[in-house]
Amino acid sequence: MSRLSRPRRLSISALGLAGFIALWEASLRAGLLPGNLVPLPSTIPGVFWAEIADGIWFEVVRSSLSHYAVGVAIGSLLGITVGVGAALVPTFNALHAWLARLLRPIPPLAWIPFAIIWFGVNPTAAAFIISIGVFWINYFTSYSAVRAVDPGYDEVAIAFGQQRFVDRLAKVSLPAAAPGILGGLRAGLGQGWMTVVAAELFGIPGIGQRMMEASGLLATDIVVVYMLTIAGLYALFDALFMVVQRRMLRWQP
Amino acid sequence: MATLSDTPPQDDAPTAVLRAKGVSLGFSGTTILQGVDLDVQPREFVAVVGASGVGKSTLLRALAGLISPRKGKVEIPAGNSPDTRAWSMVFQAPRLFPWRRVRANVELGLEGLSLSKAQRRERALEPLALVGLDEYAERWPHTLSGGQQQRVGIARALAVRPRVLFMDEPFSALDAITRRRLQNELVDLRRRSDAAIVFVTHDIEEAVLLADRVLVLGGGTDDAPAGMRDVIEVALPQEERREQAGFTECVQRIEGLIGTSAADDAP
Ligand SMILES: Nc1ncnc2c1ncn2[C@@H]1O[C@H](COP(=O)(O)OP(=O)(O)OP(=O)(O)O)[C@@H](O)[C@H]1O
Ligand SMILES: [Mg+2]
Image (cartoon, rainbow over all chains, first blue to last red; front, side):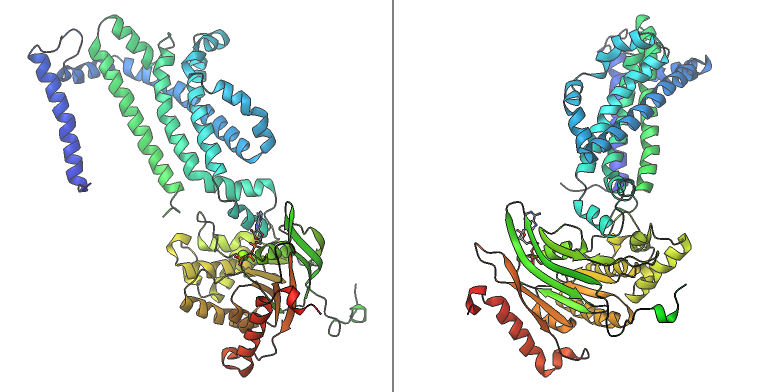
């Protein structure tokens, strides 16, 4: 495969996106698509502005972000802790191995009934559901990242007087596994957005609930505004994370 | 308070920095090496040679206490200084931590000793200068060549001012030119360090070039583990050893010892 230069690649990508939108707009205007089922792209900016002017946009984004932040933080922290612990402590690994195998295939959304019974229809329930998907991603990536660390590094640490478990955790296991662990964190940031909307469809205030309302009114343009909002927020978070990641892994070739 | 007269006489009874007695080594069912006795004196350089797979690396790990011997005893008398370690090791592959800068790699063994941060820094820069890499202190390991990385590995081991320095084929992965240069540096370095060195190599010329004594391992058969074939004193001056008359003779003698099986010199 021949490689494209960066400006060329970027302009082709932009062209692809613009072409898609133009095609969409044109087919609607030509009557090839039903106008009551698909919004006209050119109306989206206006609708977006109306949502912002009403204060609705900020309100729902703020509330979704808070579910997201709490869910992702708890899920990541627990996932990394349990994953690293399982990789380093054989007894702990054996103790929870079957439990993990049992719970792993259950999709986060299947926990919604319990979330509502335990926490009610409120932000805690949303954060709980979000944290589940994020937990599993972080659990598995950090487990395999730590398992893959060259045992030779541990031998070096021991040869240089770092016999204590905490010393080797901080000086070998975590830094050596950092590329994998950060990869899991990043995947979790994406997974979190997927469950945010689903968790809010059940009436917990946020982007998901607003989209549900809009679809009840057949306001497809509002639905698209929030789809784009999620895409934008994801891109923003991902870009910020990449900056942090690049800084933390600047030792890599 | 100890007075001068209380101090035990040291000159006529130098205390060994490492004592190994009747050491046997093995994995699961099998014994691979048995009956190794070795006393290493302060500042002494002992080379360990033997065929590949005879158990040189395993022996070195056991001498360092990284693994326990199946039989016998290994003792490295503890020092009493809180800012040095009794021993350290240079591994066959440099095994630097890629997530630490060169200086932080050299500081690894100093962490946990009673040294301030500034003292640690100073103690790391000193051996780095010794191996000619003080300019590279703030670099990431992957930006160094293989030979430079191995020198950082040596600096890391020297930083703790060990009484015994274990080296496991430290130069075997390097090209001939770099190896020759690092061998010369090691000869140089010995003059400036107080460490006794136990140096594993499969290169007999290297052993004779560097060591005061050469411990020859061999004699293993399908049903008997290998053992100590002999300990050869290298009675050659350190300067320009390669050019000395006795050099080749000594190398050949060791080659002969490794090549023959134990059965050959049974009476
Ligand atoms: N972890 C292990 N488990 C089982 N057997 C091992 C293990 N490590 C080494 N051995 C065996 O012990 C013997 C000695 O290994 P060792 O690495 O000490 O040899 P060596 O003399 O250092 O060889 P080389 O010169 O090739 O490095 C070999 O036969 C090897 O197969
Ligand atoms: Mg070896």
